[in-house]
Structure formats: structure tokens, C-alpha cells
Image 1 (cartoon, one colour):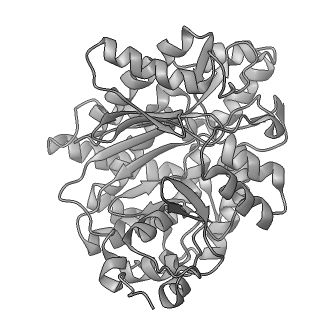
Image 2: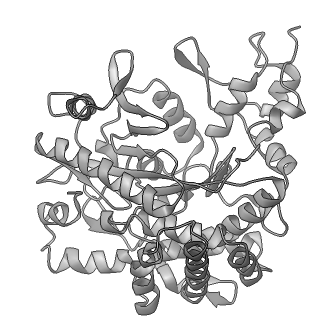
Length: 452
């Protein structure tokens, strides 16, 4: 029998934390036809594959090092080094992952420059880079899936176990999010931050709701993105059950991940389906082909879990619908102010104390249709968002005084203050513009919300 190489220390190894509190951003945006608003195909001279190559060529013209990353000869990403990268999502959206920065202002400024670069290149191909929380004009049955080797395995996995194939396809191919990656310093710092994010995420989702349209119509959902995610795989997505009533430990994170099977494994330069057994069972008995999990399998497995906050050696906060592009800074500003200032973080935990897993689940469901009017236990999401936003602003102001943030950083929260003071989410405002100002024209919608 092969020797098992992954012990408890190896399982804990990804959760080591960092030596500072920095900020990283991931922004997903649509690649769409400027007139119809529908997703571009992968193939062809004006397809998303060609766009990836064109972005790299554009960067090289300005003296940057840009490496095209391909799979089976198909361009899928542009790597600038140090974590600075464009990549194609499974349904053809464009994801930008920033390098890490010492403050919110620097992360937002760098991300804005990269997104405008991609938009400028796309415009030469009669395409638009579209911001928001969802691709509003691409029907789920017409998603242009990109040629990624693991895609077929993942689609089979989710569709086989799901009752809503349209929503599952939408979750994989139409949803757009702006995610922030934050640091933790040690296990105690991890416990506080993870606990606060897990409790706050279903509430905060209301403040960021920004995906009301699907296939050009409104079905009653202010966050179509969150609704689709909730019907994909409830074991892998959503609230971390062990981080609700008490601060979580690294061992609880490990134990939770061990209960889930892998979806796929790397084999050579490709991917194969993983057996439908818990990772813990694979550790004990192997994968059934004579091999046992190693550290690479464990890292890949952690990437195949998508809770509202994903933990590795950083905290990846995944709950927010993508804002329209001029408001992208609201996401890192809010979470940095709330989490990187310990008095604000502890006050948030006090504010949300006593909520149960059932409370949080119910809130997450209500937010999809009710936005800020969703109930959080016996309170409203709107009232709690207002208090959490005040704590975040206090935290950012303290970080400015300490020299950890640029002086103007708290102003990035202004769009969120507009949301909580008026009680109208970006989804509700956007829906009103769609029915009125835009005359339900996809071209007008794209013109207003494309990145420039």
C-alpha cells in the first residue's frame, strides 16, 4: 500500500496567515457585444480567446511582461506576475485578480487601470467589458462555455446533483462578483475575522444587491446571482456552519473540508473526475486507483469549496454582487474598515451576536428578493447594514490616522451610504433606469455600465 504523505500538520499548512494586513481584489466583468449585451463566443477573431491574446500584445507594446497562459493551445489567461492576472471564467466572463497592496486606495487604483486597459482593447473588437453582478442578456442555455479541461467535470458534478439546471448553469456562467482578499496574522486573528465575515455576509449581501435582470427580464430577484448560487450546491456554497455560534478554529476548518469530496484531480497536464468519497476517506483508503491524496490534492480541494468566505492563507470574501465599475472600491473599503480595525470588528460581532445558522440562512434567501427589507432575526438587514457601515467608516478613519490608508479612502463608502439612507439597492435603482431611461434597450444598458 502506498505511504500516506498528508498528515494533520499538512492539512493545517495552508492556514498559516501572513505577516501584514494587505488588500487584494478580484473583479469579474462580462465580455459582451456592445449592441446586444450578450456574451461573446470564445472562438473567432473577435472572441474572448482572441481578446486574451490581444490584451497581452497590448501590454507588451507598453513594455510590460505579459505571458499568455493556454490549455491545449487555447488562450485562457494573461499573467503579469506577482498575482496580477486576467483570466477567463467558465462562461466567458473576464476576471481580473490584482497583486496585493498595502491599502485599499492602491488596490482600487491599480485594478481600475487594468480594467480600463482591457476595456480599451475590447473596444477595438466591437466588444464591451460590462460591470455589474450578473450578465443580464445572455440566456442560460446560450452560455458560451470556454475550453477549460475541468469545466465538463464540474458541470456534470453540479448538474447531476441539482434540481435546477438553469440556475446551476447561471451560477457557473453568468454570475459576476467583486471579491476582496484580506490577511489574518495568526489563529486568534483568523478566528475573529472569519467569525465576523461569516455572520455579516448574508446581511451585507443586501447592501450590495445588484443583479435584477436575467435574459433582459425581471423575475422578482434583486440578486439573481445569489439566488443562482443558493441552488447550485448547498454543501459547498454559503455559510460556514461551524463559524456561527463561536469563533472557529483551524481544526474546525480542516474537519469541515475533510467531509467533502473533491470534484476533480489533476492528472498530468489535464484533469480527471475524483471519486465521490469524502476527502477524509480518501486519506484513509486512497482514491481507488492506488494513489493517496498529497498536498497538491489538498490545495486543489480547498479551491473546490466556495463558501461566502473562503479560507486559506488569506480570507477571500465572496458574498458581494459586483457593483457597477465606478463603485468597485466600495467592496474592499467596506471589508477593510470593518475587519482591519479591531474595535470595529469586535463591535460587529457584538451587533450580530445570537444569530443562528437558521437565521442567517433565512436572511440569505430573503435578500435575493427583499434586499434591505430582508429580516435578520427580528431586525432588518437595512438597519444592520447602516450600523455595520458606520463601524467600517470608523475603522477606515482610524487606519487613515495611523497612516495605513490614504486620506480619501473613507469616501469610497459614499455609494453605500446612499444605499442605506435611501433604502434603495443598486438593483432597484438599476431596474428603474432599465425601465425608464434605457427604454429596455440592451445597447443603452451596456453604454451606461461598460468600463471605460
